[in-house]
Each structure stands twice: as structure tokens, then as C-alpha cells.
Image (tube, rainbow, N blue to C red; front, top):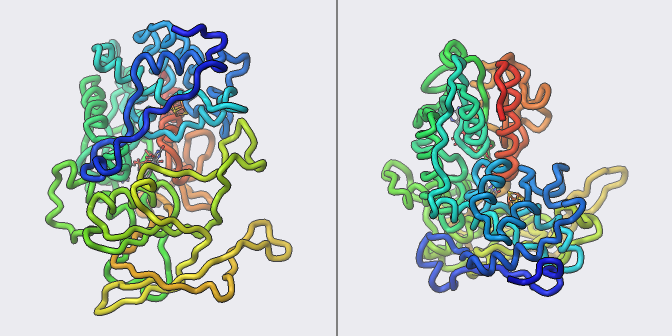
Length: 483
Ligand SMILES: Cc1cc2nc3c(=O)[nH]c(=O)nc-3n(C[C@H](O)[C@H](O)[C@H](O)COP(=O)(O)OP(=O)(O)OC[C@H]3O[C@@H](n4cnc5c(N)ncnc54)[C@H](O)[C@@H]3O)c2cc1C
Ligand code: SF4
């Protein structure tokens, strides 16, 4: 065991790395490997136990959104106290096995060691604490000792709904989670591919939540299969945690051609196949033997790249309309803020051509099927008096690329269940998401909101924290202490 006081000087950061490309692109299993316990112990020894641990700051753009007690659990891991570390970790994060795998780790971007060295591998430490906890039998269902005669309906079983349901149930409230998909998990199950998060991880947690007393009604869309009136009469409070699944479209010539699909339709289908669900009723969307162009340079686009490669695409390109970010942290997002810099995912490393500052002007097809994209380069300019830059075509930069499958991964513009929301009387904000009246309360009495449905597309860790906050607000509304 190294001497801790100089750990950050003597020990370099170590990452577990990914499985080899040639191996991992033949399956859908998780690509990231895990560090050994000794390597983890060394990483924990790099933590400086700072006076002000920015990694766990609760500020919106700095540190861990669920305010994990990072220096404390690092110390426990350093001393081999895995069970104690798990107890502490679970106080902040309801589901560290999700964030330990797929969180972009804003904690690491705020780590003080990271000012002039590589930050502590916090996410890896978190992942090993929880996976050791499962392996050693420390993670057990915790059945609430007391039950109140108060009922809460949670609409949506993504990370926001699950985190809220967990806290409400632990406080002794009766919780029913309604989910329109066949299985619970939201984006964890149907958006994020298995190569980032295998679905047994989600199922393992749902199983525990069920044993703890949460009821799941799946394949039930509130507003279609059951009405708001039905819910309102049976529950004392309602949490809206329905996410943001309405995709942004690209309204250019040729959009109606076959072979132009929304990213989520493509990803959901592959997740369903991997999960053994029946997809025979769906028109198949596959990249096999095709030239694929992914429009949109974010996480969703990157997941389309990895999925296309696994399906056997001939070539995959990814276009982003924004300029290429810098390789290093720019001055505009100084430490300890989340840096606006270039990110390369495991999927990008598997064989994808990426281009930035690209606009798609039109799609060209043959016999009703897309065959080519007509694009141009853009530069971002500030028109006089404007607050935000706008894209301007670079003269003479037109180019054409072949494509038999185009995947639109340009973000999400709203919750997409307007009739239900009108029925409930909840107001929307200027961006088309559910407005917060105060905290997590909406404008409708007894109706609360959490996650992407109010914030717009965000992160699993933020949805989890918002679900936790919503549970506190619902507890206060019902006069029950939620811890
Ligand atoms: C492809 C993709 C990859 C991503 N990768 C990452 C990543 O690597 N790391 C990360 O941190 N974040 C990632 N994100 C973002 C993250 O998944 C979301 O921010 C997060 O899941 C939002 O959680 P949520 O609970 O608010 O909503 P969701 O996860 O969307 O869950 C909402 C649930 O509500 C259900 N629902 C909606 N309306 C109704 C209704 N009327 N009745 C019943 N059920 C309803 C939906 O079916 C859905 O299951 C990714 C997102 C996508 C799309
Ligand atoms: S949840 Fe994310 S930000 Fe928080 S400690 Fe884990 S990796 Fe870091």
C-alpha cells in the first residue's frame, strides 16, 4: 500500500481501457473493463482529501450532481473498508451501478488533482464499490418497516422515476410506477446500448425495488391506456417522470424518403432484439451492408455509430453542425467547470469518420429510398446585435456523400404527450418542457415533475438527483419525512 500523502504525486491515473475493437464489435456486451482491487486502492490513494472537495460540490455545473461523499469513500476504499464505502455511496446515489458505468463524471472534471495532473478515477472507484457490494452480498433489499396510508403514482420508469420511487418507498409511502414500455428502465433500457450498460444491470436493480415493495405496471401508457382522472382519484400525489422522447426533425428536401430514421427508433429496436423482445411487428431498421450517416454529434449519435458498426455497416460517418471543440479544456470553461472540449467515445474508436461544421441541405433518393446527402460546410457568425451565433454557409464548400441509412440524432424537443399534460393542467415552459412552479411542483395541485421531462435532455445522474429532490417535495406535501 503506497503512502497516501504523496499518492497524487507518485501514482499516475489508471483507466481500465476497453476490450479490443476486433473483439467488442462482434457482440453487444459492455466494452469498458474494470480495474483490479489493487489498482483501485492506488487510485483511491491519489485523492488529496481536499479542504474544499469540488468533486462533490452541489453547484449546478461543478462536481457530482448527487453529491456523492467522494473523499470519504476514497479513504474507505484505500483502507479496504468496502462495506462502509458502500453504505456511504448509497446515501448519495440510489443506483451507483448505472452512474459507475455511464456517467460522464463531472466529479472528475472538478477534481483538484486534475488542475495540473490527471484526475482521480472516481467513476471506477464508484463502480467497484457497488459491484463488490453485490458480489459480497452487501446489497440487500431493504423492506420499509412502516407503511403509510398514502399512495404516490410515478409516471415513467427512467432514472428520475426510479430514484424518486426508491426514496418514497423507503419512507413508507405506497408507490406504483406506470411505464408505457414493456419493461422498466426508460433510456437505461431502450436508449443506451448494451455495450455501455448491459440490461441485466437494470433488471437486477428493478428486482430489488420490487422486493422492497414498489409496484410496476408496465405496458401502460397514462393518458392512453388509463386516464389522468383514474390516477387522480386513486393517488394522493403524482410524479411526472416521462422523459423527453420527442425527437428534433430535419425539415429539408427529401426528408420523406425511406431510410431516414430517428436515432431512438434505431437504438430501441436493437435494444429490444438484445433483450429478446418481439420486434416482428416493427419495420426493421438495420445498418447491415449500408453506408450510414449519423446527423448529430452527441451521445445519442455516438451510440448510433457503435450500433451501426455492430450491425455490419459498410461505412459510418457522423456529422455535427457545431464547430469541432478544442482537444484541451478551453478558457471559456475553466477548472472546476465541466469543460467544453473534444470527446471521443469507444464507438468513435471503432471506425467512424467524424466531421464538424456540416449542414445537410437536402436528401436525394432513388425509387423512394435515400441514396445521397447534399451538404455544405458552415461557419458560425454573430449577425449584428445578435446574442447567439448562427451558421453561415461557406461558399463553394458543397459536397455529396452516399448514404442508404440516415440516422437523425439531433436532440429532443419535448415530452411528447401533450393531450395528457393538457388534461392534467400542467403548464409548459418556453422550451416546451414541463414548467416548475416551485422546486419540483408543477402548476397542477399534487402533481410533481422530475428529470428530462422538465429539464430537457440531460444526464442519468441529473435525472436521478432530480427524482430524489421530487421525492423530498412529495414527502413534504404529504407530511411524510423522506430521507
Ligand atoms: C441514446 C441515448 C444515450 C444516452 N447516453 C447517456 C449516457 O451515456 N450517460 C448519461 O448520463 N446519460 C445518457 N443519456 C441521457 C439519459 O438517458 C437521460 O437524461 C435520462 O434517461 C433521463 O431520465 P428520465 O427518467 O427523465 O427519462 P427517461 O429515461 O426517458 O424515462 C422516461 C420514461 O417514462 C415513460 N413514459 C413517458 N410517458 C409516459 C406515460 N404517459 N405513461 C407511462 N410511461 C411514460 C417512457 O416510456 C420512459 O420509459 C442518453 C440518452 C440517450 C437518448
Ligand atoms: S455519479 Fe457521476 S459525478 Fe457522481 S461520483 Fe459518480 S461518476 Fe462522479
